[in-house]
Length: 265
Image (cartoon, rainbow, N blue to C red; front, side, top):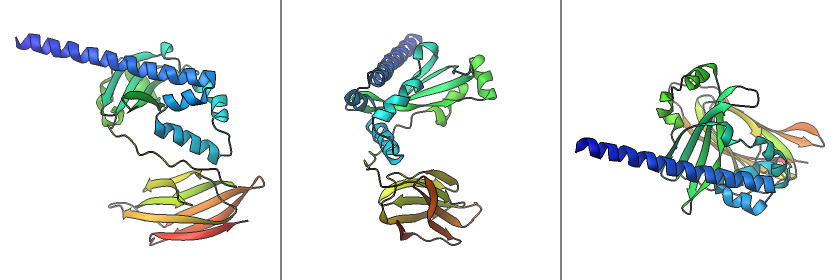
């Protein structure tokens, strides 16, 4: 009897995984169809809300048009699932992964993790990550998928907060953050830029900069134990008339949370 119960549970789990795979693949196919058709409304309905707003914010902050410029480049980034080898589908609450492996356009073997979020009882595509290395290739070719049991390869079960939709500013700009030994959060004109944990970051400023007065909020969340304490620095560089110009610089050996203003002409 115990063997029969165990067998039934195994079959039930396999059927559930197969059903999840089907739902996730249907979701991804709907996203690719929206891109191919350049259908803005369908794009919004097939992407998770957080992914949709993040993509929109990034493109507008870079001076691009949305969704026009997204459609222009996204079609080339689509991945044909029929050319990949399915490994598993797994869910955790409102989050799910569908994992495959195969070769990219350069004939290199990679692991592909398609990520999804459940909204209103429907799975929405939440973008994809790709990994490749010599060690990973050996494992995939040997069909050794034991590494996928690691936390890194499990959906976290968290529905992320919905980002604030931002408008593009007058200038595109880049922020550089160095925060060895500290956990730091930086916002510019009320738009969260990055939370760093004992590291450095350089990237596009979400929302850009305004002509005139801008504000930057630097929050020192915590000092990290057993870390090399170095001065915290934040630099802002604006693109003005196609020339990059430093418009703000902060550097403190013993940093405190501060709010400062700077002017861009």
